Amino acid sequence: MKILNGKIISKQNLLLLGIMISAVLIDQLSKIWLTSTLQIGESIELIPSFFKITYAQNTGAAWSVLEGHMTFFYVVTIIALILLGWYFKNLKDYQIVQKIGVILMIAGTLGNFIDRLLFQFVRDSLDFRILDYNFPIFNIADILLVSGVFLLIIDETIKTFNIRSKLKK
Image (cartoon, rainbow, N blue to C red):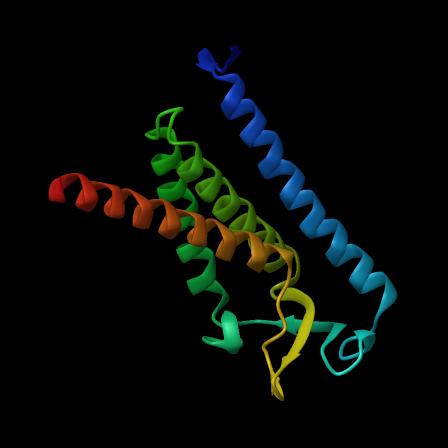
């Protein structure tokens, strides 16, 4: 246990904080590499007809939804970070899957928020073509956010399944 601002923080939470900071750094470093290597719209094909690194700028959300509405994204992001922080603070140490999910969601949210604050757009790079469909270009922050949501859904599904199977006995 460590003391931070007069409060005791568990080793588990320190580790999770380290994971969150590392994830944000990896996201930002990948974006720095991207912008120093490619011009907007330029690509490096890694797996022909399937995966390439493409430099894209997105002023909206997924699929460029709400493009150009930065104030909206700032407000929603700040509210989301406050709610995620509150949710994390109220989780117990044994709720590790939920804690990891929330930490990944915070890291992903911060990664894209940093971009929006500094550049007024999000730097995207992961460009997949799946079954002749050009999937929207995304980034590591998006992967973190979706992975966190996925962990929370899986954890909740397992808990629900366990409760139902106990009720049947």
